[in-house]
Picture 1 (cartoon, rainbow, N blue to C red):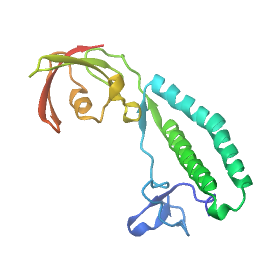
Picture 2: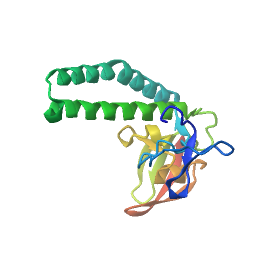
Picture 3: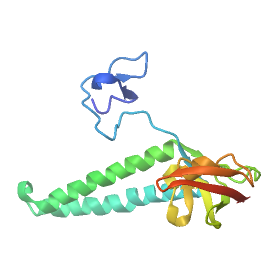
Picture 4: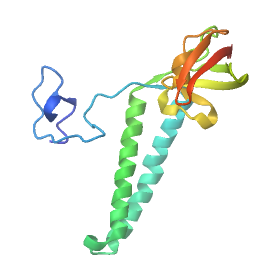
Length: 193
Protein backbone atom coordinates (compact mmCIF):
# COMPACT_ATOMS: atom_id res chain seq x y z
CA UNK A 1 0.00 0.00 0.00
CA UNK A 2 2.79 2.42 0.91
CA UNK A 3 4.21 2.65 -2.59
CA UNK A 4 0.84 2.81 -4.32
CA UNK A 5 -0.54 5.78 -2.39
CA UNK A 6 0.65 9.01 -3.86
CA UNK A 7 -1.50 12.13 -3.81
CA UNK A 8 -3.83 11.57 -0.85
CA UNK A 9 -5.34 13.97 1.64
CA UNK A 10 -7.40 13.48 4.78
CA UNK A 11 -11.07 14.20 5.13
CA UNK A 12 -13.04 14.44 8.36
CA UNK A 13 -13.19 11.24 10.29
CA UNK A 14 -9.65 10.22 9.30
CA UNK A 15 -10.62 8.72 5.91
CA UNK A 16 -7.99 9.27 3.26
CA UNK A 17 -9.03 10.01 -0.31
CA UNK A 18 -7.16 10.57 -3.51
CA UNK A 19 -7.35 13.75 -5.47
CA UNK A 20 -10.99 14.24 -6.58
CA UNK A 21 -11.98 11.85 -9.35
CA UNK A 22 -9.67 9.05 -8.22
CA UNK A 23 -10.51 6.07 -6.03
CA UNK A 24 -10.35 6.01 -2.23
CA UNK A 25 -6.98 5.22 -0.61
CA UNK A 26 -7.64 2.08 1.38
CA UNK A 27 -5.80 0.71 4.37
CA UNK A 28 -4.32 4.05 5.33
CA UNK A 29 -4.11 4.59 9.07
CA UNK A 30 -3.78 8.06 10.57
CA UNK A 31 -0.82 10.05 9.31
CA UNK A 32 -0.23 11.41 12.80
CA UNK A 33 0.78 14.95 13.72
CA UNK A 34 3.22 15.37 10.83
CA UNK A 35 0.46 14.59 8.36
CA UNK A 36 2.63 12.87 5.75
CA UNK A 37 -0.27 12.82 3.32
CA UNK A 38 -1.39 16.42 3.81
CA UNK A 39 -1.04 19.13 1.18
CA UNK A 40 2.34 20.83 1.35
CA UNK A 41 2.64 24.57 1.84
CA UNK A 42 4.73 26.76 -0.47
CA UNK A 43 8.06 27.79 1.08
CA UNK A 44 9.55 31.19 0.31
CA UNK A 45 13.36 31.17 0.14
CA UNK A 46 16.10 33.53 -0.94
CA UNK A 47 18.66 32.10 -3.36
CA UNK A 48 21.11 31.90 -0.44
CA UNK A 49 18.56 30.05 1.70
CA UNK A 50 17.78 27.64 -1.14
CA UNK A 51 21.50 26.86 -1.56
CA UNK A 52 21.89 26.29 2.20
CA UNK A 53 18.96 23.86 2.27
CA UNK A 54 20.34 22.03 -0.77
CA UNK A 55 23.82 21.79 0.83
CA UNK A 56 22.34 20.50 4.09
CA UNK A 57 20.28 17.92 2.20
CA UNK A 58 23.34 16.77 0.25
CA UNK A 59 25.33 16.48 3.50
CA UNK A 60 22.60 14.48 5.23
CA UNK A 61 22.25 12.10 2.28
CA UNK A 62 25.93 11.63 1.49
CA UNK A 63 27.62 11.83 4.91
CA UNK A 64 25.16 11.46 7.79
CA UNK A 65 23.20 8.61 6.20
CA UNK A 66 26.42 6.59 5.83
CA UNK A 67 27.48 7.38 9.42
CA UNK A 68 24.14 6.27 10.82
CA UNK A 69 24.17 3.16 8.62
CA UNK A 70 27.61 2.21 9.94
CA UNK A 71 26.45 2.80 13.51
CA UNK A 72 23.43 0.58 12.87
CA UNK A 73 25.62 -2.19 11.42
CA UNK A 74 27.93 -2.02 14.45
CA UNK A 75 24.94 -2.25 16.81
CA UNK A 76 23.54 -5.26 14.91
CA UNK A 77 26.94 -6.96 15.16
CA UNK A 78 26.66 -6.81 18.96
CA UNK A 79 23.85 -9.40 18.72
CA UNK A 80 20.59 -9.87 20.67
CA UNK A 81 18.61 -6.93 19.32
CA UNK A 82 15.86 -7.30 21.95
CA UNK A 83 18.06 -5.81 24.71
CA UNK A 84 20.47 -3.81 22.62
CA UNK A 85 20.23 -0.11 23.51
CA UNK A 86 22.86 0.78 20.88
CA UNK A 87 20.60 -0.72 18.22
CA UNK A 88 17.55 1.16 19.55
CA UNK A 89 19.50 4.44 19.58
CA UNK A 90 20.79 3.87 16.05
CA UNK A 91 17.29 3.04 14.74
CA UNK A 92 15.89 6.18 16.41
CA UNK A 93 18.67 8.30 14.93
CA UNK A 94 18.04 6.77 11.51
CA UNK A 95 14.31 7.54 11.76
CA UNK A 96 15.02 11.13 12.82
CA UNK A 97 17.54 11.56 9.98
CA UNK A 98 15.13 10.19 7.36
CA UNK A 99 12.40 12.50 8.67
CA UNK A 100 14.72 15.49 8.38
CA UNK A 101 15.67 14.46 4.82
CA UNK A 102 11.99 14.17 3.85
CA UNK A 103 11.29 17.58 5.39
CA UNK A 104 14.16 19.24 3.50
CA UNK A 105 13.15 17.58 0.23
CA UNK A 106 9.59 18.86 0.68
CA UNK A 107 10.82 22.39 1.41
CA UNK A 108 13.05 22.38 -1.66
CA UNK A 109 10.37 20.86 -3.88
CA UNK A 110 7.79 23.43 -2.74
CA UNK A 111 10.06 26.45 -2.71
CA UNK A 112 9.51 29.79 -4.39
CA UNK A 113 12.72 31.80 -4.82
CA UNK A 114 12.44 35.38 -3.55
CA UNK A 115 13.74 37.95 -6.00
CA UNK A 116 14.86 40.64 -3.54
CA UNK A 117 15.78 44.20 -4.32
CA UNK A 118 13.66 44.60 -7.47
CA UNK A 119 11.94 47.68 -6.04
CA UNK A 120 13.47 49.70 -3.24
CA UNK A 121 10.51 52.01 -2.59
CA UNK A 122 8.39 49.44 -0.69
CA UNK A 123 9.27 46.67 1.75
CA UNK A 124 9.02 43.25 0.13
CA UNK A 125 10.38 39.75 0.56
CA UNK A 126 14.17 39.88 0.36
CA UNK A 127 14.35 43.56 1.37
CA UNK A 128 16.76 44.70 4.06
CA UNK A 129 14.90 47.24 6.16
CA UNK A 130 16.02 49.69 8.82
CA UNK A 131 13.23 50.32 11.32
CA UNK A 132 13.15 52.64 14.32
CA UNK A 133 11.37 51.86 17.57
CA UNK A 134 9.49 55.15 17.98
CA UNK A 135 9.23 54.96 21.79
CA UNK A 136 12.91 54.21 22.50
CA UNK A 137 14.40 55.85 19.38
CA UNK A 138 16.45 52.70 18.61
CA UNK A 139 17.14 51.45 15.09
CA UNK A 140 17.28 47.82 14.02
CA UNK A 141 18.07 46.34 10.61
CA UNK A 142 16.21 43.25 9.39
CA UNK A 143 16.15 41.21 6.21
CA UNK A 144 12.67 39.96 5.35
CA UNK A 145 12.74 36.26 4.40
CA UNK A 146 10.40 33.26 4.36
CA UNK A 147 9.72 31.34 7.57
CA UNK A 148 11.96 28.44 6.51
CA UNK A 149 15.11 30.54 6.72
CA UNK A 150 14.18 33.06 9.42
CA UNK A 151 16.97 33.44 11.97
CA UNK A 152 16.69 36.27 14.51
CA UNK A 153 20.36 35.88 15.48
CA UNK A 154 21.27 36.94 11.92
CA UNK A 155 18.47 39.58 11.87
CA UNK A 156 16.53 37.60 9.26
CA UNK A 157 12.84 37.81 10.12
CA UNK A 158 9.93 35.97 8.59
CA UNK A 159 7.21 37.67 6.61
CA UNK A 160 4.87 35.81 8.98
CA UNK A 161 6.42 37.30 12.14
CA UNK A 162 4.65 40.25 13.81
CA UNK A 163 7.26 42.77 12.63
CA UNK A 164 7.59 41.22 9.16
CA UNK A 165 3.83 41.11 8.58
CA UNK A 166 3.47 44.72 9.75
CA UNK A 167 6.21 46.25 7.56
CA UNK A 168 5.66 44.35 4.29
CA UNK A 169 4.36 46.71 1.61
CA UNK A 170 5.29 49.84 3.61
CA UNK A 171 7.41 52.77 2.39
CA UNK A 172 10.10 54.91 4.03
CA UNK A 173 8.45 57.13 6.64
CA UNK A 174 5.48 54.81 7.23
CA UNK A 175 4.71 53.91 10.82
CA UNK A 176 3.31 50.54 11.86
CA UNK A 177 1.91 49.11 15.08
CA UNK A 178 3.29 45.69 15.92
CA UNK A 179 1.30 43.53 18.31
CA UNK A 180 3.92 41.75 20.41
CA UNK A 181 3.66 39.81 23.69
CA UNK A 182 5.07 42.88 25.48
CA UNK A 183 2.29 45.07 24.03
CA UNK A 184 1.97 47.28 20.99
CA UNK A 185 5.28 48.56 19.61
CA UNK A 186 5.34 51.33 17.04
CA UNK A 187 8.02 51.20 14.36
CA UNK A 188 8.90 53.65 11.61
CA UNK A 189 10.46 52.47 8.35
CA UNK A 190 13.70 54.46 8.04
CA UNK A 191 15.42 52.85 5.06
CA UNK A 192 14.83 50.09 2.52
CA UNK A 193 17.90 48.47 0.95
